[in-house]
Length: 514
Ligand code: HXC
Image (cartoon, rainbow, N blue to C red; front, side, top):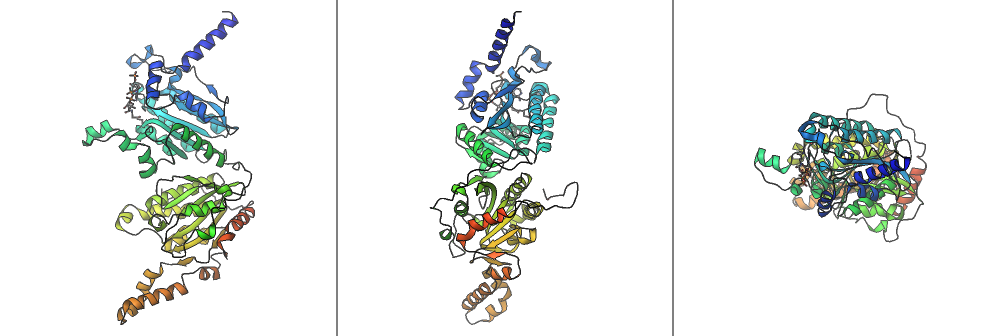
């Protein structure tokens, strides 16, 4: 064959493969409000930066007449490209080809690009849109999933792993996203569940829609499986790019530095926190008042909202923020918020991102529900994560810091590097009301006017203990500061921490309260 003809043949093959599952299947995909796999990849990476690999890979299944079927690219597109001019690996399951189901060659394409991402120390982005294990391939497809999960685990903490759920993600397939760092979902499009509605109906006789079982809202608000919720695929892709602008490319690089910018003038840090310790406020405004350009990128915004986590920049450098949110349950720690905070601390620690903690909480949430849901085991995760983290760790106590909450929220005792407190901070074993009722119970009961006596004792207690100066006198906090000094002090603390070099004793690994 003449060389020109070979080029023609190559072009024809490429064109055919780029058709995915064909016109009809693509029409069905678009009618569901979904983009095609190739368009998704092109929308995430920088223009003209995508290079596809393994487009000629074919499945090797023989049963159920599979040998008579061609599956273009075996239902998954893999390759490399750039985001914000920096290299990424990416794969996208193509639902138009056998429902994006995962057979052995499909899995091999994914594991190959994952290995490549690890070797080149770049992020891996996986777009999931699949009917799950390819039923015709039996145990070979299960083996493929196992190979992916193994790599998710080994890559964890070395390169960023991002999962995007843009269609069904069913059965054991959900465990790859669950093992990755960040999961993105899109309203009405993303579906994640272990057992689908059909199985649930057969086994337990309950009817439930896919949306109510494992739609984007369910995983963003109830389960906490998703980290970012978007209303459209386009919005989701912008979120991915924004996240990538904040995080380092691997665990031996720093996050990209941006030009420093002052916070916006509308966030007046001295006017956000009410002096009445019972009044709520939005702690995100405090974060916005200290970060560059007031740009705070919140993670898991809709789940466990009594805690706030996310990224911002101080003087151009990425910082991870952890805060109690007095807008919800007074900012208490509970089972879910403990999980949310602990995992984020470990993410930041793995990728060398300094942590800033804003403290304002009455403690752990009391009650049978929480005790039985395992608040001891879950709450311990925060203690473990902060204690183990060796990145620079700075705390600012804004108002209340009571009991276990005081210790858990990056206290000096867990080796915080700098602890600052605002003048209205109350640091004590518990709130003045509870404390007075316990330690002055006899006096209150014996008084002629118990309510007046109780109030007197509450005031006495507050005066004596519920302030920052007792802790400051012991060196548990380093400085009592004015709110307006916060950003400057954070900048200072981070600047003088650049050479922080702290090690934990040599061990294979600890045993965190998973
Ligand atoms: C092979 C599959 C498939 C699968 C879908 N298809 N899922 N082929 N194996 N798992 C094929 C369909 O036969 C169909 O082919 C095409 O993909 C599109 O599927 P439709 O059903 O027409 O699409 P839709 O109506 O949108 O429904 C999507 C769906 C449904 C909800 C995902 O296909 C479905 O329920 N699939 C099975 C899901 C499942 O139970 N998977 C196994 C999970 S167990 P044609 O040729 O007709 O176009 C699992 C174990 C993993 O994954 C364990 C790992 C540890």
